[in-house]
Length: 230
Image (tube, rainbow, N blue to C red; front, side, top):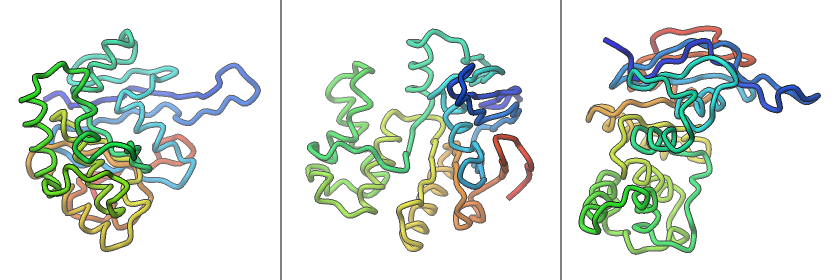
């Protein structure tokens, strides 16, 4: 069976052909199966966030190939790459990137506007995403009125509202205490149980030792140095 995501000798160099050129990812071949939870592990500067952005089609490789659901996406025109990204992936960022002036509901709804859905369908999806993270009762609150843990849940709901196949999470526990991290990981485990694929970049032992993780890909200086079961 073909993997859901595959990279082949991908490299990512920032500022190529300049004096400050930096190779963040150096020839990594890896794959992610449908329904799997994979952790990209490594210290700061190891290349895990850059590899995560390549896997999630947020950036293009300098060389090598990225293949999603059997299709090479590395060289797609930007509008088609955007479509693949929007319909395949949901993203949970370290800093959440919520819009403070908007309500919880409106923040979660934002990714739906490019899809040109009916108002009823948008409302249904937002309601389902908020129910998934137990925030239905806070839908009309401004995000500035929420706790850090609640804001994290809004970010997850926004990532889920497009009904993605893959959840991409970059250092999701970076701003959470151990109790909230445990709650978040239990939520991720439930999403995986429901069929979602997860790719998580982290250096947090609480994440990469969690039972939900199937496989760890360890990076150092932009290279894959170790791969195996959790």
